[in-house]
Amino acid sequence: MEIIFLGTGTSQGVPPLATPNIEADLNNPKNWRTRSSIHVVLGEHHIQVDATPDFRTQCLRESINWIDTFILTHSHADHILGMDDMRSFCSLLGGVAMPVYSTEESLQRVREIYPYAIREKPEYKGYPAFALRTMPEAPKIFEVPGGRILATRLPHGSMESLGLIFEESSSGKRAAYFCDCKRLTPTAYKLAHEVDLLIIDGLRPSPHPTHLSIPEAVQAAQELGAKQTYLTHLTHFVDHDKVSTELPPNIKLSYDGLRVSL
Ligand SMILES: [Zn+2]
Ligand SMILES: [Zn+2]
Image 1 (cartoon, rainbow, N blue to C red):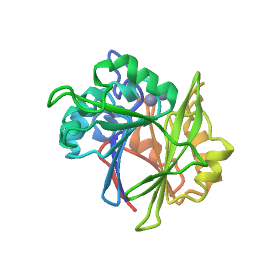
Image 2 (image 1 turned 60 degrees about the vertical axis):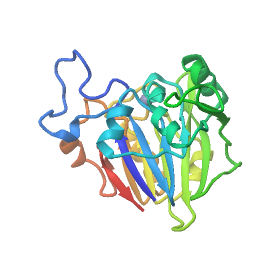
Image 3 (image 1 turned 180 degrees about the vertical axis):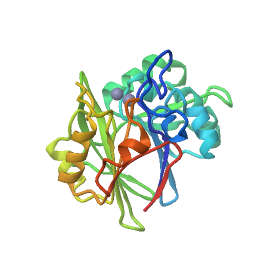
């Protein structure tokens, strides 16, 4: 399994526009963060998780040239607004729509934002086409050619986001993506117990009403017994080098372009 961190920043990206007093050192490229998203290669199967407003430049930067399955964790703007740029990936599928999996509530937002793309095949070559599918939620299992995916809802303010656990058939490795959440649920703890790789919301050092703070994320990672952890969805209050020295050895800050192979 390979996980490519396309973006690791909070909803505005880092640095945010028109903001004086950025705490992160902008001379360090690791403190420049596009909006949070990952690309997962499970066996030979390419899964794109979320499409941010930075999706186009993220794919160019990381040479993402194929998507088999798209999963939308939730419909906040920083996760959904790059979906129109999936049109080239739709074309590569050869005239069929890109399968788009999410909760029914988030799929409704996709219908509202992209009504022209809700079809089983592109209207014309080069147009986007999304085949909307309700994401199976645990204990249901979503089988894909390279393995399986378990999904569970996580609290995130007035909405819920999907937490995802990827299991690769060939290696037996497991990775969890818990981005955009205020806390983990008992189901999330059970599904991701002793996971090989945990990627978890760690917004900033101080508490926030809808996201995990860094101390809360560290505690959750330790309670899970995750073998290695990367914090994501980071704000400009998080300086990569400074905060990295304060974290336990198996917990690290992610950064754009990071690749982890399991
Ligand atoms: Zn977000
Ligand atoms: Zn969100």
